[in-house]
Image 1 (cartoon, helix red, strand yellow):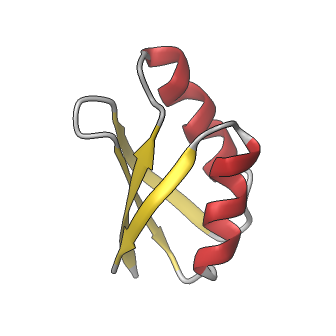
Image 2 (image 1 turned 180 degrees about the vertical axis):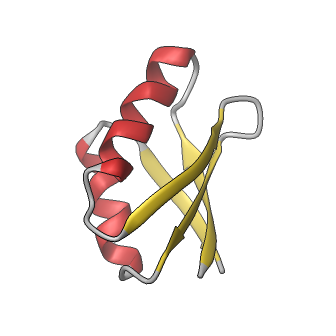
Length: 68
């Protein structure tokens, strides 16, 4: 299932790298895109939303909303 994760706190390509690495570290998550301008990540996964939130927050960013 594709999910769009709206993320607060990303301001540079370094941030994009951290979010990408954090999400990629979750088993069962395929990162499609992390978009700095739109401040979102697109993933393909059946992983529980809380696991996605935890991975992003562990990198120092806040999840605003997850759209499925």
